[in-house]
Length: 320
Image 1: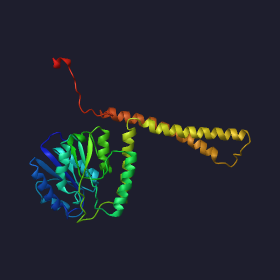
Image 2: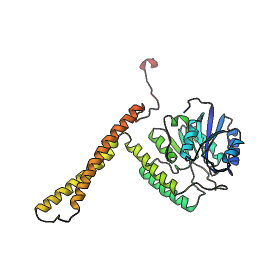
Image 3: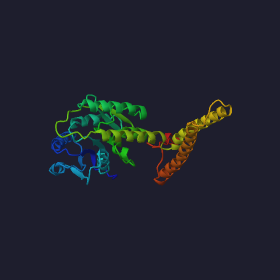
Image 4: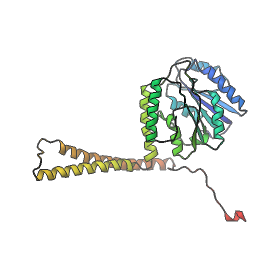
């Protein structure tokens, strides 16, 4: 990511097959950003669109266009936009027109209170019943596993300080969990209620594949947040429980057989006992190997498991 700050704001918009919406959205963004009287840039990412989205983008100004060779998804688009942004504050929103640009000043105003991230909260969503139902279920699961204290982490309308993404790569469908990741890294995150407009043109890209990918990435974020620097605690702990269960079961079967209380001639339980013991050993060894790999990852990339905001030195001599 470039370290040069050329603009106050960078507005980043991923787009896939949104030819019908892109021109109106650009006009609205320009109108709002001009009203702020600060230097800004607009970045549109064409995520391998198969319609005339890119052609429409080429006719718009001011605009920086990042064109993908294929369709890599919203997370990849946001990652490319963020890494090519030159603004002090990064603002992201969807290209379908459901995130109204007129809410951008509200996010910026909230950031001036000292927040590093301001996330939009679509408190009155204009989506189908099925989409809202699935979203509520996902939010409930997210609060259990991640607990990022955000009502609507899936809302793309967000504002970030650029420094939030130093050393951070986005992958998979992880854009929904950016607030959780940044909270984990020590940044201050809040949210504000924003309008959510009904989709007027184009087709939704939301389907069962995105739901599945989002769930898998949720588990990934949960693991990295809880056990990224101590995977042995997870795998080793489960391995010990499995091993203990298998051992206790084996001892019980052996004692019961010696006392002629049961017959194991056609019983599956000895195999169950052996399975749990072996599974426990494998999980424990996997935890050790993961622990070694994680430590090498942090050392090799000169990373730490903590994030220092600042260092303050109080020298008594300065008070004289």
